[in-house]
View: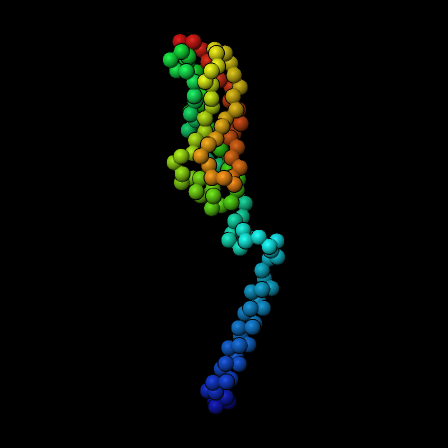
Length: 135
C-alpha cells in the first residue's frame, strides 16, 4: 500500500478523479442562466432609497415660494453596482421647475437628473403642491 501511494501515476489518477468530482459538483449547483452575462457578473436587481436636496427653480426676484420641502426621498431600482455609483455621484439632483409660472398654486412633478442610465428613479411623493406668491 505504501508503494502504491508513492507512485506518480496513482497520485495523478487521484488528482484527475478529484478534479472531475469538483467540476461535477460546481456545475450541478449553478442556477440555469438565460445566456446573459449580467447574471455571471452579479447584476441583480435591487431597490434602495435615499434623500436628496430639492432644488426649486423659479423667479426669486418676483416671487416667494411656500410648500416646497427642503429634500425629497428617492426610490432607486436597478443593478447594485449602478445604485452604488449613484450614491457616490455628486452630480445627481432632484428639482421642480416653476420658471415662467405666474402667482398661484401648482402641483409640480419632481424631476431627477444625473443618475446613471439603467436605474429607475422615482421620488416619493412624485409631485409636490407649492404656492407662488408675489413679493
